[in-house]
Length: 281
Length: 281
Image (cartoon, rainbow over all chains, first blue to last red; front, side, top):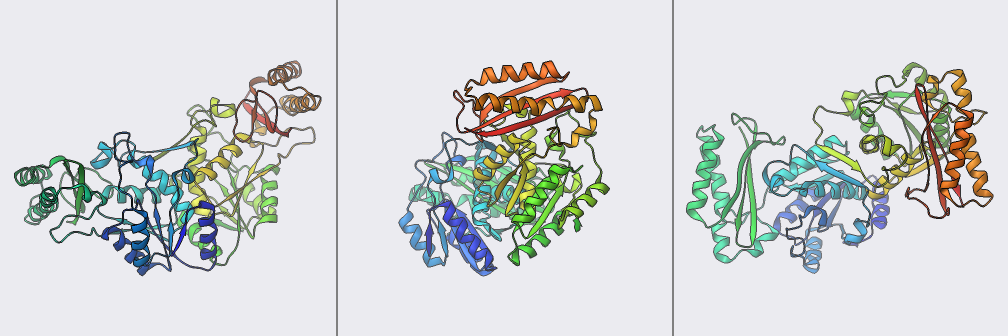
């Protein structure tokens, strides 16, 4: 596995591979890799000739009161995991390599981001889109792989690629879970063992929603109320949101039809967890 | 010469050419071609294997009180001129092909655009950058060619390519002029013959600035005052601005040193003309 930290070197390498007609699968990450990330790599290996992973904790997508400084980092372990998973090139730039002191161009996302996490994290997706435009131009991927766990991110990236005409296919990949259903997340390390147990309410409440919908429930509000009660009865987590939208347009659904996203965020003492399911009705 | 109107078809064609290892020279235009555009094509032909020209009058870069509707258009003549100049592919999309009803992503430019034309045309460069991101992703050029006549556009595009890491080399090309020095412009057709004569004051005043600087003048204000007097004494044009900045950062210069841009805009009855010179001091 090659490790590259300079944008220029990365672009030169990619130009060579492209020149040789190779397809490129790209897995952008913020590091502290877990099985979720590695499943993205497996998908990428199946689809593309060359797999590029980036590790970059992007300051632009953290709010002033968010956890940029204490976001978990372990590059030594990440390198080993990436190598074992079969990553060909690991792109690992410093913040100063990615952002100059003066930024002249500012991107703002509207519509898709006034719901779910976006509404709680103003500017978050502006930062995500900014770094992805840069990374896409550096890596020139044929395919880019994103975990469905951040469903809003998948929606924003799909729309972004469409609106700006990037010649890239976005591949959403299934969420990887613990045996008890808890979605893998870099932030899970901040849960106490009791909280980790309680945090299974996220997935269980999503399964409850699935069952209700399969049994014919079409009223979003009723489903959300039942999920809320379930979580409150079975954990000490504070619900940040439970929302149901169309996917990928993220619009409220008067009737549950088509691609339906049920998504939630729940806060425990030191950490906020998200999860979702995507249903075809 | 192939004429392509659909983004998808364009991207498929470009993928083929790229696959064959061809370099692509791109000349983005708003049509109503004149010798200035054709000189961009000549440069592109010298540098690249394949020359792509786009013709797209981009509504996003016109203000509500600007001349989008009456911007001159003549696609039949443009096709002939592009073909004769040696363009390989003419990309000519409709507005509805380029922009969907809902746009989720908005770009704003800061710093570079609060001077020169940018300060008089709020949002103009936001629109320019938006369409260029799209066109660059559609055409995937190795080189993109821009006339120096719009020096601020050259500066913005150079910074944009740098900040977003587009793997594209921007090539600024000399302004093409009439024998009397008037810069070629699609908007010149709106000048009366008397105004066309008077409009030579733009270039003459720039030559005056050049002479003053060569003779040792280092004070921008003094140069601007002399240019102003010259234009007022020799034409009925209304000066929109005369400004002197560093290039491409477009910052005021306490002393005239390095790459110096002297730029001006002058209004005649139905049309506003711009011109500039770039000096190395």
